[in-house]
Structures are given as C-alpha cells and as structure tokens.
Image 1: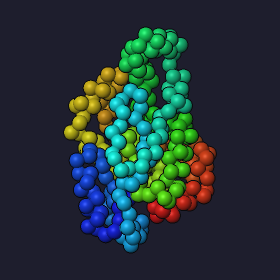
Image 2 (image 1 turned 30 degrees about the vertical axis):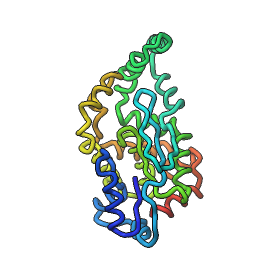
Image 3 (image 1 turned 180 degrees about the vertical axis):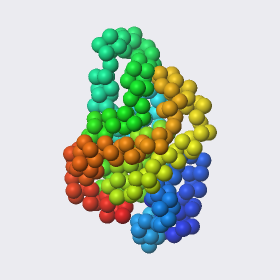
Length: 262
C-alpha cells in the first residue's frame, strides 16, 4: 500500500522508482480502479507535497527466510507479524512425538528439517486460509503495533511489505480495507493480483516452499481467501471494529486511520 501526491506526474514518477519491484502497487489505486472511482485521499494528496516512501510499516521476514533488503532513505518500523505467539499456536497443533522430533532436530542444528515437520504436519493441512485465521487469532499484539503506526499521520506516506507482499502484507491490507468499508470483491481483486505479479520468481520460491514441507498451493492466492478472513472476523469477533478493539486498536486510532485514508 502506498500513497503519492502533488499531481499525477509526481504519482507516475514515484511509481517509476518501483517498476522493477515484484508485486508492488498502490492498493487504493487498484481498488478504486476496480470500483471505477478514485478515493478522496488521492485528491487531497494532490493539494500538498509528500515524499513517497518516506515511511514503511514492515511485517518482518520470518526466521525461515532471508533478511529483507532495506532501501536507504526510508524509515522502517519492523514488526514480526508471525511472531512468538503465532509460532506457539502452530507448535501446539503438533503431536507430542512430532514436537519431540522438532526439538531434537533444532538442538542438533538441523533447523530446516525441524521446520519441515511443522510445515508438513501443521502448515500444509491448515493451508493459507487456516493460517490466516491463526494469524488473526494469535498475532493481535503485532497487528496492533502496525495499526499504531498507521494511526500516526506523521508516518505517511506508508509502504507495507513482507517477503512476497502476498500473505502477511495481504492480511494487514485486508484489515485496513475492511476498516474503510471497501467492498470485499474489491479486496479480493487486489489480493489475487499478487499471484500473477509473483510468477517471475515462482520457480525459485517453490524451492524454498518445498524445503519447509509445503506444496505449490502456498505460492498462490486462494480466490475465497478475503471472504473467508472477513467471515472469520465477523463470526468470531462481531466485525472489523470489534476485532481491532479486542486487540487494542481503540476508536481513536481507528478513526485516525479512516480520516487519513478515506
């Protein structure tokens, strides 16, 4: 998600800086183009200067993958959205024997072999949708940290990313768009764009995915993912506002984000 200003020429110039970055796009441009309109935040932005990419809310790379490259001149807020609480929620789903194997392998230094047990026995059966539920339920502290950043107007413009810009980034963007009452079909449209955007690196990414015990499904974007996430938030928490309140994103922060982005 990015925000640019000072007229269409500046927006185009800003985007040109990121032409070679896979799966980079302005979320609001995407959803408004899909809906056939432009959001007010872009119109307002054309009335004053903004420095594109001066800030970033970053769901940090997980331990199984490489450290993210940092771009000079950007203020980074690093948030490990799938942190210790999320990891514990997955470990609890292992059988005692598998948990013992995993601990043993980690102790002997066979880290990837240990992670592959978790991949085969928990992550693969859960799938991207099940893991999305797990993130919503167990990563509230980390999601709150991101929303605290988004609620502070001095942090804008904002860019959100993770390793692929698909799953963890997709979850944060979904929550923001739900807060803004963006229609779920527009949210789905934006989310599913990632699959085609990431095709150039799919083969190399599949090597990493297979190494941790996962299949090709994890390189895709399930077409019902956004609807399933919304249904989970509605059914378990009573809607997006109540979900955010339950993890500590209070009404003031929610309204601040809505004011900036609506």
